[in-house]
Amino acid sequence: MRFRSKVGRTVTETDNVWFTLLTGNSNQIHFNEDYTRRVFPGEPFNGRRVVNGFLTIAIAAGLLVDETSRNGFQVGIDGVRFPRPVFHGDTMYSEAEVTEVRESRSRPAFGLVTIHTRGRNERGETVVEFDRVFMVRKRGEAWRGAPAK
Image 1 (cartoon, helix red, strand yellow):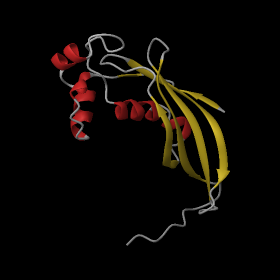
Image 2 (image 1 turned 180 degrees about the horizontal axis):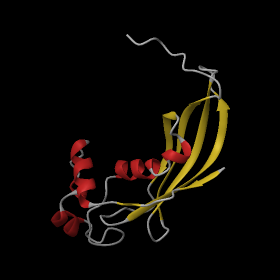
Image 3 (image 1 turned 60 degrees about the horizontal axis):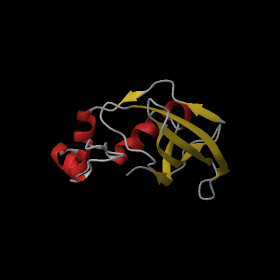
Image 4 (image 1 turned 120 degrees about the horizontal axis):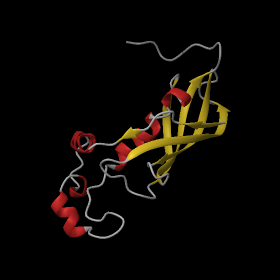
């Protein structure tokens, strides 16, 4: 089964600065233009500030929540790669393919779904790819976790 995001998401400078500060990431490549011009003047950065990789993952996954994991919860992420950087003003789109479906060994009322996700920019270039694993309830089953305290 394959999915494509119905909408895109343009990444703004504000998105990147807020996310980077919220996560405590002090790498100057995310918010110091003078630094990036001096240290990374050539390809692929060309002196531009780079969008935080974890924000790139979050947007790529978030664009497909309605189609994939709205009724579940994420339990893992594997094989993350960033073939190209994302810059302020880039618009991201996502596509995913289900690569595995299996019953949960620890919670038989649930299944585990693995999807390979690709985030692309407006030029169709892959900027991130990863495998997301999420747990979903089987039809007709109810949550039987530990009671709330």
